[in-house]
Image 1 (cartoon, rainbow, N blue to C red):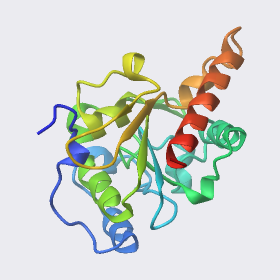
Image 2 (cartoon, rainbow, N blue to C red):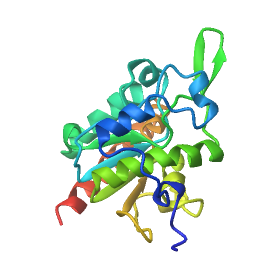
Image 3 (cartoon, rainbow, N blue to C red):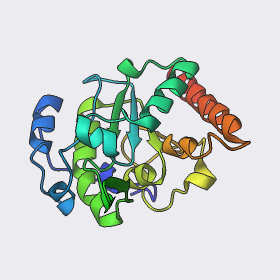
Image 4 (cartoon, one colour):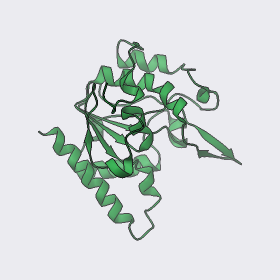
Length: 211
């Protein structure tokens, strides 16, 4: 087994015969405790057969209420970057490594909390099932949680960003940051350069699929 093999690529159980059945099964998931406080499961969205799959970390506050991935502020910025790179969101499948929103309450606000390794490994069962059904040509890991779920702890986003890595099984994985990190630098001097770098990476993703 390759060292580059995360929990989402080693699952063997069948969780659904098709994406609709899988989504229905995931809606009542209680495999970890995150379902207790989340509004709902936020499953992946996109074509049942897609060449390109984007995997993020987990739903945010907006996604938790909407029941859809990548619809909050980071998702809107992500859409803008995809458009600049010439990638049609409707032709891609978007999902997260963890399907429930993990947060810490602070007054009336719900502040994002990073999923732990146990939660990532448990939820990798659903991600693995999605990938088996979709059979993409390329997966884009958006951030450290997605990279860990797909390729294990050996992958480091700061070191491997912009690389296409291959595991013993499954499609190749392109490593990059999560678009939420771009939101944190928008008002900084390097903010626009970081966005341009990310758009450039999305263009690389598009080029990969054309060859």
